[in-house]
Image (cartoon, rainbow, N blue to C red; front, side):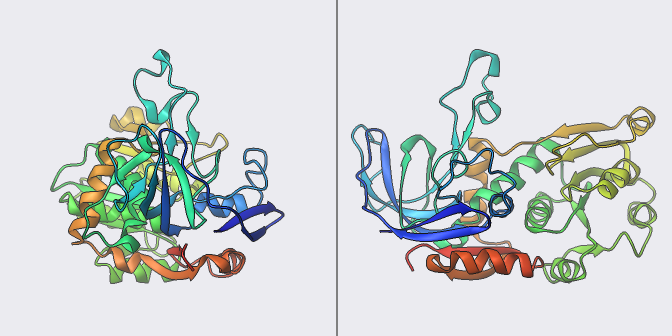
Length: 338
């Protein structure tokens, strides 16, 4: 089989290795597609060299078909189409209060252990979600990031008729916008990249550039002065933190989707003045995956338009180099059987 390895120093290799039989409680997946995530790009840039075990096969956004079953696995069979929810929560403790997706000893498969950018992948069966036979495996590779968006929108408490402002029009921002719109929200996307603004408009969203217009005034005009009921901070930059408390209306909810590795200034006075809520959101839970699978299976949202490019696994070095050269793209998939 063919497998890719991150070797450090912005370098990937493609190696040949023996196909391994699944251990007890595992299945072997013939991986169809593996998406390139922002976290994968961070790994490529060396930003997670302290965490990953170099050399390592990365990747966690994927779809595939079960190829072999290990002892003790009864809920899945060879030929099943599946996706992996890449959370290894076997270190869960009572102090984690049952929230296994944020448990103290959580391991992220594809970062803390080998991932999906290989032709065959052995994983614990408890991470699997079964797909319907008619599911498009190319679209199914979007289920992991879509589950992030589903989780964000669910935790926001958003209901039909509310106004949601999404700060950041990258892949996750657009997926959050799709899920929010599907839930009946009026969605406004704030993005500074003109290519991504154009893409958001192609997808049917109201998208504006906050460096060219007064975003708060624009939202006020669109809501008869009420401002946003929900704000999703997806951009991960200081200007987004500055504007999120301004654009939120009275008792608005702000969902922190972006990961801020260092403390940042936030206008706490606005939380007092408008009785705002700040909601943390991390990865996803089982129900979010099931909702994402249902959305992909129905295929009523423009998921196909999220896929910028599909490249063979053997082109992995070129793929990451091109992402650096062209950051305007959305989702690149690796065809893991090529």
